[in-house]
Image (cartoon, rainbow, N blue to C red; front, side, top):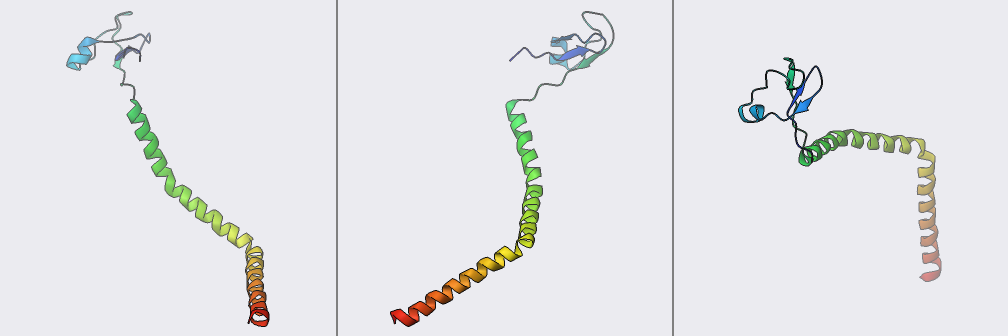
Length: 108
């Protein structure tokens, strides 16, 4: 990982590591390159754990929406395929009746 640079000049964009800011928490008064008074703090880059945590929270927040969407798709599929479902149920019932008839006529 590159050396962390904790301050940046707003005017020229120069970034550097300031020991004064690291130790005391005070942003330097001026840039070391252009000597202007426009210096700001650069936030620390996120660690891998922070990135994984953000991804996990994002997935956790998306999960209820995915569940609702899946249920909605199942309901729509069921509504659109009522005929298919009824034909399958009818076929199962007819097959069971034929099997029972064969059992009672020939096996007993």
